Length: 242
Image (cartoon, rainbow, N blue to C red):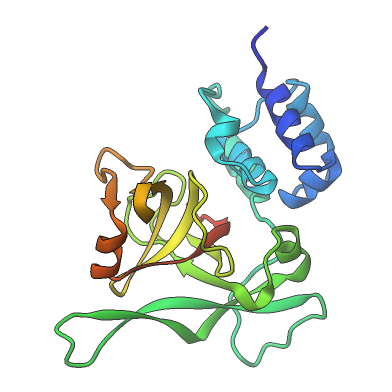
């Protein structure tokens, strides 16, 4: 018998050692009944919710979504769903805003053009822009606060999952490539976010979600050095504004 979507969610949740309540909390939902309804196939989830579930469990989105295609939503349904897509509290703050006891500042990385550099850029930490994260949000993803940074996604290469202007949280302590996971990359001074796959000999394959316009890129270990490709860390969180 073919595994249902709900059974698949339940199997991955249990494999991750999460209760329904813990998964609901990780997804930013107030009640575990939402998870229960999804697992019993009594409520049809949106693709946005399935992506949240996959990220909270720690598996690639394709492991949950597979060939799932939701029915056409009712008018206004998307607006209601979009109110519950936040994992943990976050906002943009300045240096004068005090932290709560259970929060930490997470800085941004940015591209900075070198003076007299003929358009050449380097990746540096912003001294003015940052987000504040709840410590429990980072702890749930096994991220040390000192290793967390944020990156803004530019362009349409990662659409529809990460539209232009999306923000991702990056764990700089996790630079070992796990096939199919998203990573932030410093590519010769350009900040990029891609799904990575290992290649024999220490090379990598970069993959975009929008593969029609952005085909795979492959680099050997030698080419990575020559082209100044450095893996900054694994993406553990994302924020999307439509």
